[in-house]
Amino acid sequence: QSVLLIFGIAGMIVGSVSAIRSKRLTTMVAYSSAAQIGYIYMGLGMGTQAALLAAFLHECGHILVYCVFLRRFPVIEVTMTGFCMRMDAPARGLSPGRLFWLAAVGPAVNFMLAGIWALRLEQELTIRGSAFWAANLLTGGFNLLPVPPLDGAQLASCLCEMRRAGKKFKGND
Image (cartoon, rainbow, N blue to C red; front, side, top):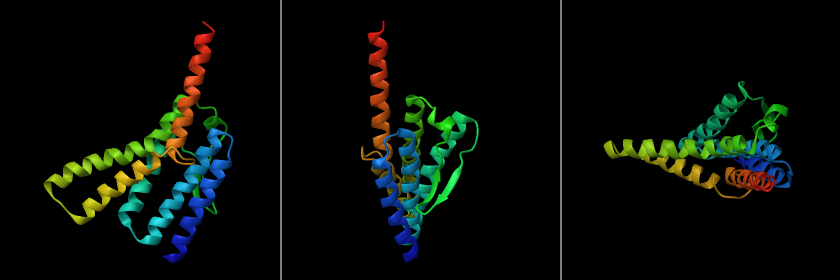
């Protein structure tokens, strides 16, 4: 488990630093996915099943939206930092609005699961249920921080691009 913890921390650091250094949004999304997998490895290393499941479901949300937008499964690469979605040419061609939804769906999945679990906990309070609820709230909330390579930074970048594009269109009227 300590090896997984070390690889998880290394994956988070390498993925995050690479995303911060990236100049392109699509590359940043790819490195962000690698950093997210670092969280999964760290969760495995720490032995927290609830955190691991929350991170896994977070990434499944990103993959599902990718499949909806591009009508195919993303290429998942195995790197030294973990698994990441390759942002190939069709993915790089997504509009800022679609990239926004691609980034937003991970935290949205976590908050949706936290809401469902909160309703479930009203009926039967368990330690595991409470841990899963907290893990989803923390994973979703943490990923909304506007710090690269987290989803919040990608969301802010997409909003800025959409706003900039909107101003250009208004100026051409």
